[in-house]
Length: 368
Image (tube, rainbow, N blue to C red; front, side, top):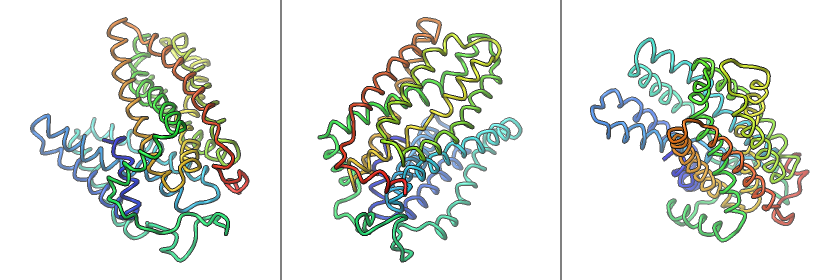
């Protein structure tokens, strides 16, 4: 639900505005989290946390990044998308330790209620401060010029669901969409699906304490913030497909070496892997957002929503697949090596995008 609702959320923002969609999304998160304290059946958890929280968080994730970046900025789009994406990682770094501590001290019900309260606290802030379009403030997008004025404030005629499907139909006729979706699916496989889900048990298989492995994964999150912002800065200055090629190739090298690095204790080589993998974690987002905007114009935020959905499908496949490999072979090594090979595929797919110059604005303007 988190990934699959993303393109529809972008279409809803286009039709009803960013402020309304984010407000409703926060209310869904609050309802889904808060009502779990009353659940008595397994399907209650699926409905509340899976559907309500899934739709709520999916409406405020990458679709929001792509929409705000496209609507409010002409220059510095890469940097802005990097900062907004890093905000998601920062939220995890801040709230997950707090949630874990609350759960341990007070129980999961307290954590659910606190999560609901935090989501509700965000509603008045959004209503008071968030605006849908620069025109609402009597201004233009940052960096707008006569030649590139930025998107105009218009309301689509079609329903949001139909708008999302129409954008998909148009994008699906191009090879660039499928190359982006393939690369981003592999991105999901090699981050959330593989390392995010299985790094801790894989390290534990090699004798490393679970707490140590969890802290290493937290360090990945710390460097993720810096890497994503730096990637946004680079996206304003370097062809995005070049960046994707480099990121996937670097990730593949890291995964290729990981089986040899796992040990009961940390050592310098493992720290090098953790730091580099953290810098590379979601550094793929800013160049992917930029390519969707460059290639698909006004459809860009919605198309990015569909590309992001492929990311989550890839993550789910890797989470299940790596677990199956571990149960079948007794080791994660084959999963890590297979993921390294997939990164090569993603790098080749990125190189094949090769954005036509006529489909892009001049590079200096993006980074002006």
